[in-house]
Amino acid sequence: MPRIDRYILSQFLTLFGFFGLVLISVYWINRAVSLFEQLISDGQTALVVLEFTILTLPLVISVVLPIAAFAASAYGTNRLASESELVAMQTAGMSPWRLARPVLVFGLLVALLVALLVHALVPMARGRLADRQAEIAQNVGSQFLRAGTFQYPAKGMTLFIRNIAADGRLEDFYLEDARDPADQSIYTAAEALLVRTEQGPKLVLMQGMVQNLSNAGGQQRLSVTRFKDLTYDIGALIDTGTTRKRDLRSYSTARLLSPDAELLAATGATPDKALAEAHERIAKPFQSPIAAMLGFAMLLLGGFSRFGVWRQMLWAVLSLIFVQFLITAAENQVARDASKWPLIYMPTLIGALICVGVLWQAARPRRVARPLPADPQTGDAR
Image (cartoon, rainbow, N blue to C red; front, side, top):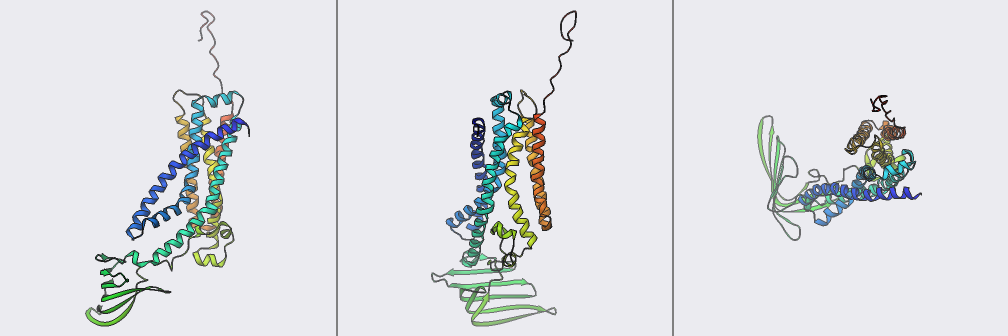
């Protein structure tokens, strides 16, 4: 690689590291705050919160890297222009097509990072995250079994526990089930135990009674049943993860390209949906070179201006927004009808055509204004 290419590439990579770090920090902190509130309210420890935020990091990085590539190329090109280095390169005979070569190499390097993330790290992290969420969902005690406060695990349900003993016994247990206004029940027990079974968590109530108020045929009837022990299924009150479908994004791209019956049964998806997810991953890395080329090519338009290149910068931002809008629109169309997955590649193709068109326009020779003819008597320009 020539020295001038290495120089431009090093400038862009340095700026890419800076913008990438800033954007990842902003996105990650925002995600970490929401996870912190959710998990801490569920009684989880700080280590669990840290684990969850780390597992969301690969997805955040894959989303941020194309934006960081655009910011690095646009800012780097602006700095080269403001320090007259870009003018010197063009004066030396380097065309916009030649100057775009290191920018394209920079975009491809970023694309390799994105490909590594979306094809390897993101599926692995999301799979681990799904497993940990299922484990936490099974831990009912950390979800809503808390002493001394009224809990509302589901709409129409009220739960109160006076004390949780060191051996796990729930003392002075109270549960009101008013989900059906025509058939309401109140369960009280001196003690209760939480038991995990293959069918989900169950409560074993001891030394208590059930008060049932039914309203059948317009007549209310109250019945009281006392018991020594009673089993109550609380699996229906909470999401324990046993019936939750697995996310397609936790599977490898190779399996999504040729989905088997086991994958389709675990996710509840169709073959077209799996193919759409796989092709969305394949198209994702190509967004990085498009973003880098847009940030570079748009700043080559126009000549020198004492007001800077704010107009070109505005066009660069608008072009990136336009391409991102096309990407979102294509993803929405595929989400409605997975058989339209070829639309995923259209925004990348349109973005590439925009880059080629802008470079072609920048490479065209500019017209030089003809001098006005001089006055034959005075010699001054008319």
